[in-house]
Image (cartoon, helix red, strand yellow):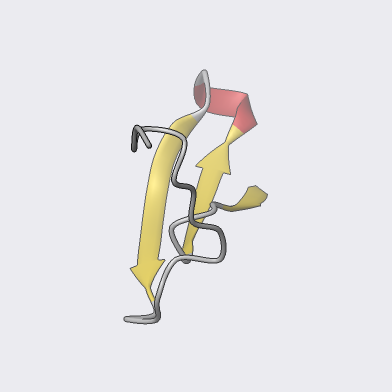
Length: 42
């Protein structure tokens, strides 16, 4: 298994022996680790 932590605060386990199939994921119910205002125009 490969563990992947994403910027939205989730943790995923991927099975590399099975084409990267997602085995499970956990949502820690926290705020995202990163936020951006690039979509906002001033």
